[in-house]
Image (tube, rainbow, N blue to C red):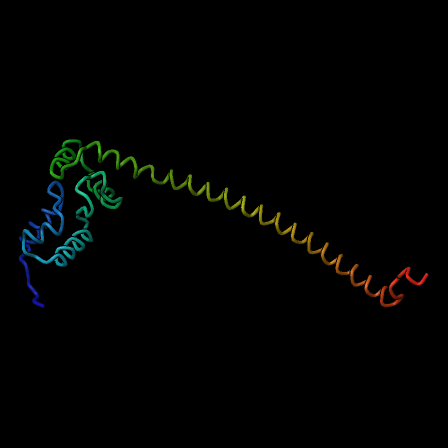
Length: 169
């Protein structure tokens, strides 16, 4: 295995091809640039760790992962309208998309709160059902113990007095 070092300028140029608006796939870049797929995946992973937005699955921004959309929202948060427009043109996005993603991020906790409330209600219902079943089980255990005691008494009575058969008459 040959360990090849690539100049930082070439690496950055290739990473720009991965980013919007070009959003080239790694297999396309590997074929075009003559760099192994593994190397390109590692470069993309390292760039993402540094906070760069490099979509993986689709060139369509609406199909990007939540993390990729969130990264865009973070990058554009401090921007004014003109800067946002320039940013969006650079990356092949629409400002409306970024606004929608920002709204989704801001409302994410509301959804989480609603889900938590539903979970609490479901847990309460399950606990109520569990208590009801436990009460029913205790009642049936008592009835079973009473029946077992009566059965034991009847056997003792039979042993003491014998069986009562009317056949002797």
